Length: 261
Image 1 (cartoon, one colour):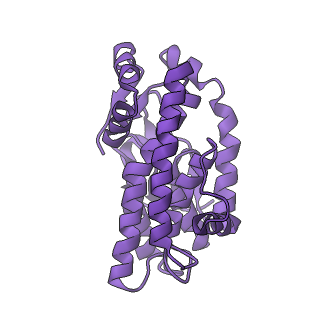
Image 2: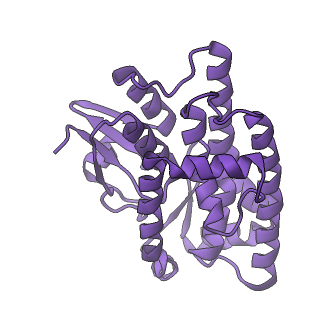
């Protein structure tokens, strides 16, 4: 049993970033699903570790840390080898900006697709419209990522690192909904290389195994047993992509709640 505990959900790209980093550094850790996750009333050690009530949260001995980026920084400080951040300040800034874009913009796309397909928030023409919006938006991000990648093997440059582990969970999430980089593109080749790494492959496998557990989650939402957290970027995506009535309906029924960034 490790002295490192990660509160997570396998489908969370934020938690996946942390797991990939720990596995790249060969740091042993235990994982735990927070008590009452999705109910809006989490408790236990998780509630103490993260007042936002969102995964991930990391417990290391007597130290509790929340927010995936802060956790990644802590991991880098405590276990510096192999480094996930590039050596040069400009390159460090680049991968941190890539992470921020994925965390605060691309994440909203995959979240929205989950709302449509797992939580059954819409069907028919509205669902088709919002999925088309997601595909168009994702394609624009793919173009941006391909530019950032350039001719390098990795977003970090010569070696896999922070930039790569910040992108691959989100692209795997989108691919699960049938949205992926164009075959033969530089980004597609990077995507294949990234998923071939043991750290990513194991994390992806855990995520895919948990998808089956989402089959009846829409029923739990309708029964009032599960609430969805709409961070600001998720709310913005829903409103801009045609989901205004979905948000208003969720507020009326109490199946949607808002949270901080």
